[in-house]
Length: 434
Image 1 (cartoon, rainbow, N blue to C red):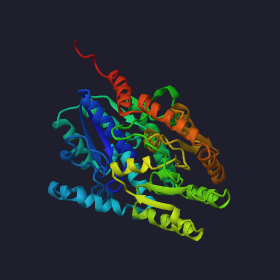
Image 2 (image 1 turned 135 degrees about the vertical axis):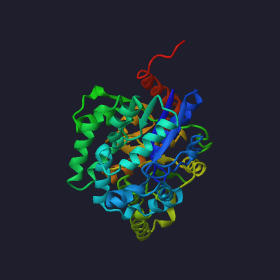
Image 3 (image 1 turned 180 degrees about the horizontal axis):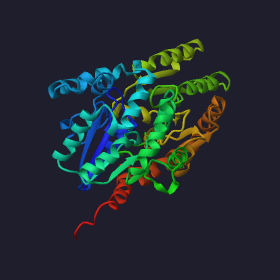
Image 4 (image 1 turned 30 degrees about the vertical axis):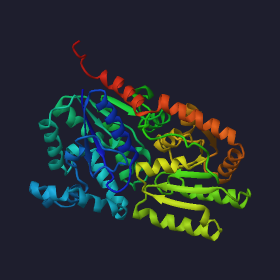
């Protein structure tokens, strides 16, 4: 099977969807499939080895070109050499570092343009992508890493005559954050475009049901394939850390619950009398995240807790694993409808139990792995009390961590994800001759 993934990159920070696509592609390659990842908008940022050959694939719909072509007809007629200059990895990464300066209105315009790409001002970019897909060797199936690329489905099927698979990966929080009229228009465009896909995949039962409700789809029209991770290097530490440490590994932003996490730590230290536990915070951070990070540092310093908290942004894969192995407990109290949360798999793969809000996908993952607890969402006191309960019971911590690790090996590895994806995708293709 020849498979092409169209995967939006971030250019400046590690992205869960990029990690998922890369891990899935690597496993499909190992099983003998021919796989290519084509980055969209910005270069991909990974903390592990990229799929072989990815460095030779150009970035399609480069963010700078897309922005300029929306704003002026002049840039819809520029020569190919000029477009390639604007699509250079270095320039796109520079633009990504300043993306927080882009207005919400511009994000809305671009999202709507991509959902209606076949009638948009981006015909030149669409022709480049379709031409490359044809001349690089027609694939057997095209995978859209996010449903926000659903505007491509009809043109891909008409031009290439191959099935298209669309992944959900947290589109609702992005769309709900757009200003009107773009929010409503984008939801309407997504509902109109998505049914053209031959297969729609969600990373969890929660998110499948959630998006079916939001889009008015039949629940059975969405197939669930759990995310998985490459397990190489992940292993529990030989002994628990002393002093104990609570960890967070996700984007350093309010939406992921960073502010609530710090408030819970203040409750643990100030109200519950904990004098030793450390708080270790790591994850992707952009310049747009710095004001919140600085504000939280100031709160911790004012409470006399700065020495017990460390911030470690943008870790490599080896540093990430070392970080996770240094933890007693793990929490990312995200405040939105999280579709999955690869960070939970990473913590559990290191035998670290998780404490998460009883909302969104978290109860599903905790139940499926047996690797943690859920607490009322949005309640820093409840989170702090759950931490204290587990910190006071090391045997229970070890038991939860061991159960989580065993479940990740069995049900949430990149290999199990690849098996489930392959089984679903193979049904779309003619049977191979035996």
